[in-house]
Image (cartoon, rainbow, N blue to C red; front, top):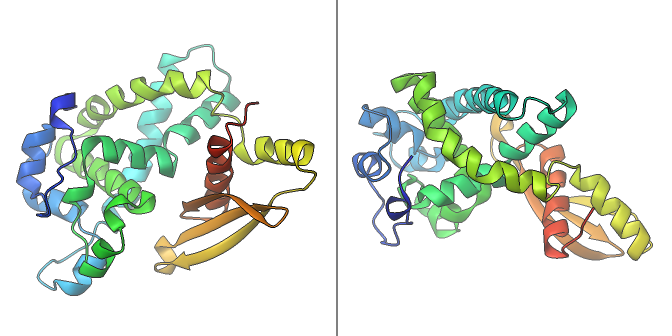
Amino acid sequence: MADEAKVEVNTSTRCEEPDELIRRLSLPVKDNLLLARALTHRSYLNENPEALEDNERLEFLGDAVLDFVVGAWLYHRYPEMPEGDLTRMRSALVYTEQLASFARMLGLGNAMRLGRGEAQSGGRSRDALLCDTFEAIIGAIYIDSGIDSVIKFIEPMLAGIADDILANHKIEDPKSLFQEWAQAHLGFTPQYITRNASGPDHSKVFEVDVVVGGQVYGSGTGHSKQAATKSAALNAIERYNIQS
């Protein structure tokens, strides 16, 4: 993984080219066209017919690779951890917001190939798009250099966040935790309201608000309503510093 000096976000208006990203992050990808595909959102494809494919297939592959790599890493790092906690820990590490955080750390936002409308509406900072791009890059690394390169790339990021997740009880179910707090302190049961759903059926993004007593306490996004509601509950927990 690149050192801290190399992962600062590029704040220029020019989109970072794939070969520049490879150099800056020392990415184990030799095929510039493959990396370009990993960075290409479907909105860019709609406006640039010379681009042959978006990153959705690589995202699908990267998601599966991440599940395996993170599961194996946790198995070896925490040899006494029971299966249920390993499952919850893996979910916390491959969660949309966490992968988006990794993407921000690597400065991927300015390298994403987005359509003009998507870029102008804040797509470069949107969790769902950053997460998808990160997964697609994992897929590209796997195709280009194999599973060992994926492990070498992702392990420093996992090590940097795993102990914090455990110390701050982030593997606990955020919906249950927020519901207990809301009922005890506010006297209401949280309701989850889907504010928006966008994208094709195979890659929808849901936006959900968690509402208590008519007030919005948190918002979240996800590729399923379940993931979006969990994200909203976690957002509320963080906003109001709720402890288990």
